[in-house]
Length: 310
Image (cartoon, rainbow, N blue to C red; front, side, top):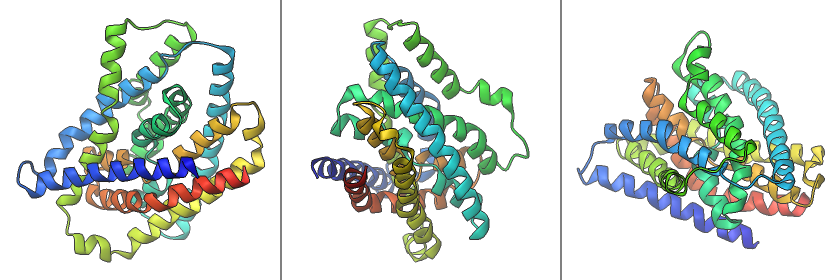
């Protein structure tokens, strides 16, 4: 119950940030299309800083074991969910924005502030294991369907700054190299902007929408149901039957972090990619806002279920 209350407080705080982005557009300070610049800053600067900073921890056998558990759980969940959601997409005639919004959680933007707030900074590393796995899918599968490209450009994928940052972070961790304090503090400060920056982008986009159309669109609620209720319940069952929460003393908390990463609202990155690749960014943003609003209730409830059954 304690974790659920802390989680609810954190989600409300993030939703207030969305409201701030909404207000600065409605007040005429900026335009909703100005959010495209901020989206690129989040994608290509802030997220890489988050990843590198998370791997700047002491190398211990306990940490490595925890990372392997988090990584294995993340890969299994992502692969199984991709198969299930792709099948649902065909069954329910979902477009690429809807499929991406159901499949991709907002772990990249929310897991760091949420885990830091409810568990502590030392646990963020395991959230970044999920983020790293998801980033691979984001810059392959998600980029392909959002940009409507017919094939993968592996050169662009491998040389993507987010992929490079994962490699840098992992190499620094396993070679036990710590960045100079000044550089590490700078990277950490930039990375700490991920929650506010992403939420402000969402609020700015939301301000440019016809709100009556957004809330009158029944598909938004259907996608929200899939993202915030069905996917978390499927994930809970997968975690339960895998028995991965019993692999070590820290495994229950590590699996809780992975579960938190899965049950977050639809990814802001989907909205940002829609902007960059000229897809329906306003629809993606509408889904993001509605799922974020629902998360105030659904995420604490799902955490209670996790604590009860895992």
